Image (cartoon, rainbow, N blue to C red):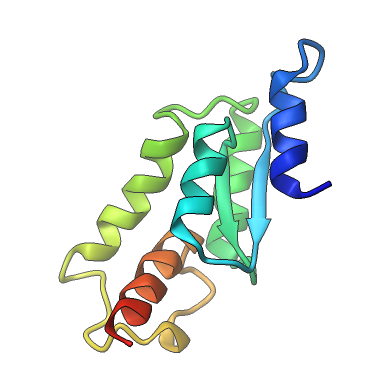
Length: 117
């Protein structure tokens, strides 16, 4: 059973569908990430998990599992902020990112690097 399969089973279950599910994976494959978010994941964290990711999860838990902006826009806000000149690395070098760099920003930067290769 994959994590994605488990997510689908949880969200299909009337008893468990309200449980917030956060996917953690080392695979930065955009279609898979989008598929998990579409199936009801609250968030997607890229391994290794960083301090910023833990802070986001803490905020999610403190709100009782309610994502204020919706799962996709919650993730998209971090991706959008990574595109702004003031917050993105000029070299787009993922190794230069610190523990406060959320998964979504790392996903976007790694995707850009992969597209150039």
